[in-house]
Image (tube, rainbow over all chains, first blue to last red; front, side):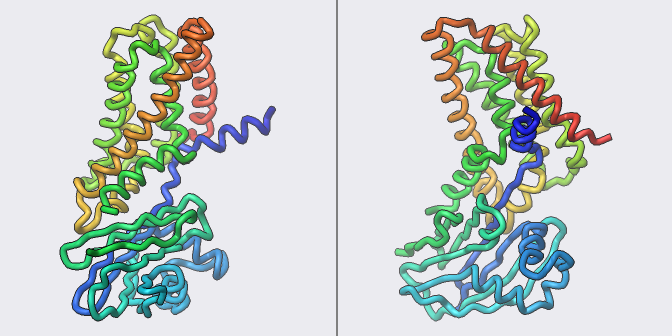
Length: 155
Length: 191
């Protein structure tokens, strides 16, 4: 009986776990410039899983492993080929962290595949929204562990 | 897809997933006194609840309501305790009274404070209120109406087919929710 109540109570957590990241990508003069907005604690937890529990988020700024982690999990594909990405930097603002990456791309394609698997290894209810703006056209991808990539059409 | 659709989906899935069970529990208690024929009153009460937490979520920008999160986690189950207690009074069982709308609105404000860290995530640069927060709130409302619809069906079956009184349903739901929420309050005691 006690176990039953522990299970029931563990389902009712007033502190909502809101496992979300939202990214903006915009094409500008031969580059897709991206801002990935994540919750700082999610990012730190995720890095601690890889590098050990003592790892602090602040150390990630100077750590090239962060770039690898990001570019392995976030990016674009055209004709099934991943675009070569570059990590630009990171800002930590209390609860939120902003990660900047960019992908050289000469001209705007008529369709592009977006993938974002950030934190899928930490949370099975993670949702990653990626808003992509090419010129005046705005499209959006909703990515989750059930569907980790999506093709956006720009016609 | 347009971003609007995705923010809508984000709000919808947030309620439907198990992450927001305290939200759903509040709704079930709020509507426990109503007979199925008064479904419109339920829809209005739930919309007032959405209005309440949309207001506090949208005020996130002003930083006026940086309330201690531990306190919020205590207050949210307390709203369920109070609503369950009110349901046990004659006053709270009055189908015609508009009192439930006010409870839904005011307690909605408190539930919205639990969303405090959502605002900064949802609103950035080009995604302002209309592009991000509005569809997110609409998604929450849609999910809540789905919960209401399912509960009304269950309550309808209970009332008509089994020929039981909604009063007994209310006693059962409000009693169980009272116990559950009271334990949550004690577990989250902030003082």
